[in-house]
Amino acid sequence: MKKLFKLILNVIPRPLLIRLSYIIRPVLVFFLKGTKFTDPIDNKSFRSFLPYGYSNQRNNVLSPSTLSLERHRLLWLYLKNETNFFSSEKKILHFAPEQAFYKRFIKMKNLDYTTTDLNSPLADVKADICNLPFKDNSYDVILCNHVLEHIPDDIKAMQELYRVLKPNGMAILQIPQDLSRAETFEDDSITDKKERAKIFGQYDHVRVYGRDYFDKLRSIGFKVEEIDYTSTLSSADIEKYCLTKGEIIPVCYK
Image (cartoon, rainbow, N blue to C red):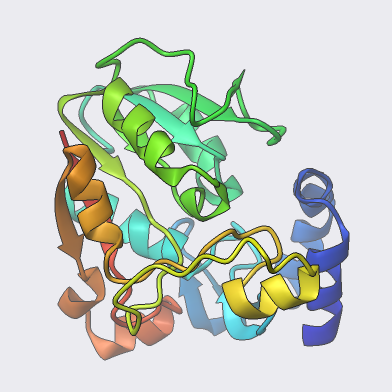
């Protein structure tokens, strides 16, 4: 199964994958029912989660029901337990909206919810993150997760995110991060897709962020909190929800 999932991820374009997932998901939910792992987003439980990864496949990470990964489930728990995201009226801008969140957020009456991306079929507004068509100080919350590693000019993108965020607003800007690296690594001379997937984790990533990512955000003007939310959870819950222990949520304020 791992080889099949790896082939699918690297061959089928992401917009088509999103459309196909709506057909395949009910079948996966039926066959993987169980009690070992639980997706906190919909509270459904399974005997196993699915493997995922463009280069190195990880076991038990993709939820059959919501198609959430470790980062989605961690973010959901953080927003639900530590913020008023689900209760307070907010104007939200969500980049490259994840399927795990999209239908749930769009139904929430307290959210004025806008999605944006250049390619996603779930985007309300087709827009370049480096040149956004939104006014200054427009949004209470920005969700932009696993996007910046795709953007050649990530500083310009960060500046645009800062510009459209309201004063005192919150932006959650998750990225794949190698905390063993002090500095972010980029190399445009690597053009082979397989080699890029091996080095950067995915063929369409342009960098591997190191610990300096947080200082990059601070240089734009953000106040950054590096939240290790798994440190507040029990080992049993980390295993039950299939989370990555020690994953940092960058919670940024203007």
